Image (cartoon, rainbow, N blue to C red; front, top):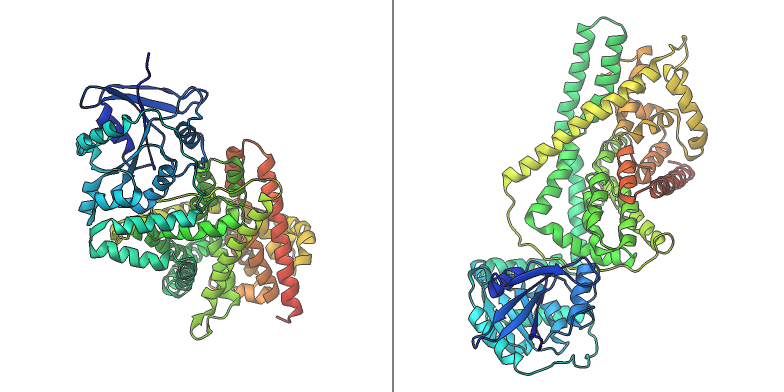
Length: 617
């Protein structure tokens, strides 16, 4: 029995390929798996105008013939006639999204170069026209050298013309892949796709032209990186400049609450717990809520406007140089909010070595929980003045701390990729969304959600940890002339830890705060505030004196800088360790992660302290 002519539908994901397959084959479909793999196989029959049947196979969407997943491997092998149990297709129908033609043409050019009889289905032309883009299929056909048929698969428009073209090319008999031309670089193919796509444009609205003009800067290899760094710089300047007034208001409320507790409750254990453990400890963290909301305001704005995808594109080239997959950008970006969802987001990375590397460096992205620590130390020890012609020094230091985390992550990725996670990095392609004005209600909802999350942490994890710390720091009661924080159970534990960290400039206050920070990073602030509030019983008001002022009286500048350096690399909270164990199916990699982060933090803090001391700071 003579086999039916075989036609493969192929294209990028989200090009409307499956919709075209359904429109062409109707109910004459069957499902199964490709031989030897669990990838789904969809095939169906199409009748030409003279009644001759064709077999059409809907291949998994992919971006190139360089596979990075089982789905993409099946597509590549099928097109080249290497799929077990399958034969070489007689023709290809390449499906592209008309509104995203330039990106989809990259893969189309790669397929056309194979020399198989090919038709290009210019799909979703109605949506492109709605967005202000009109294309000339004849010009596109001339430049590509293959028939181009405009289609709207969901409305079954253009199918008659597509069947007619299939009738023409199928009559040519058996096919063979022609000798491949010299392989072009990715950049060369991208430039050719851009040229062909631009030549096919008949009409384009000003908004689309504006998007292209902005992207010429935003996606430029040099100007785009400068633009990204400038945005980040402005963001961190705003974290300090805009937060001053609301933070002062919150601090006033905390002080008023402490005064109310003192006025209402008589001296005793309940009074001391509420004043020192709750108001003095948890209140010291809550005052940093404005800074966290300002940070997330910028992040939400960048996502809503469509710029975040451009930032991913800019970072892809940098990450590839250190052996990191471009697919790692989104998980790493998520880790700026919290490393837990960032690590979970690595499930989208198909290569196990890429995924492991991303998991291990995700904690180096400066999560929002570190911001209260950075804010406290910077406000206490870095003068609120301008440098270099009007740049806020405090915002500059915060920006440099975030940069240090990113640079540290890149260096760690490079080291991991040549040692425990050897392998080649795989690039990725992504579609750029349109620029658009963000909806105010979406931004407000996002900020509200972040505020609720932060306050819940303050009212649960931080409060519970602080309660335990208060008990350990309050008993046994110190005799006269001895600091309670040193005589207590917590103080004695801190004394043991201090033996290890004193060489890098840490004092007993920091030693006491290190253990509870394993529950949540913000606890470092509440722990120090609680201990100082307990010691304040010996002559100071437990809540009226700002925590920053207390720090300046008990810490040196080299110690403060070493503490900041420690937190850039510090081993992560228990939640991060737990999710790492779950995602790696064991304790080996979580323990490795904690070990190398502890070593980095110790070395960074030590170098910072010794350098600052030698410089006479």
